[in-house]
Image (cartoon, rainbow, N blue to C red; front, side, top):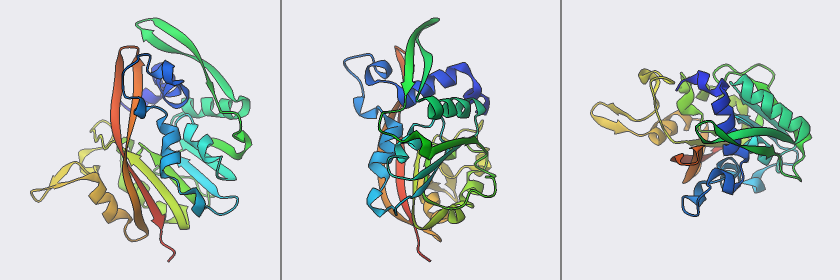
Length: 255
């Protein structure tokens, strides 16, 4: 798998199901990890401190994929910008923003597929959300700053994640929130080993990802909370990826 995977029909189908699939579509069995469903929604529900948000808060969903977390953020924020490197994902997210639904098919077995409709829940004000293709390592000028920056399962898919972190102190307003999740799946095909943030041995000692994040973010952010968030990606009716993301909430220091 490489970054090109996210432009394929398979990736689009799997991630539409991951973001918008009904529980019985994602997990068509009476057994299984039901607590791992609806991950893009749970990232916001379980990590965001909505009571800390100002009126008409701005949010950035960096690595937004097909936009489900961005729409969930719109329940709490007056403006949400979703940015992803995949043009294919952004085009479908824009369709969902404009129309509220998108028809697709997901795999059952081999060439057998099942029709489904990805739908933005009624009650979410879709006009609050906009999407654009962009590079998380070189964000365009003029984005401004945000009360929430959400980065779900992004850092271990970047070629130079530390470079992305160098932008965060300017992106997150003082008192703002940084929500970051990652399964910490460091792979050479996405991130050259020299750029891994964790999962390495340094001077004979193991360096977990959280430790390195604390070192990078400490000058500007305070770690507020950590948790484990399971998630489930369906490949077909009998094959699934079950993972556990490390979830962190960081608060931007006032000074």
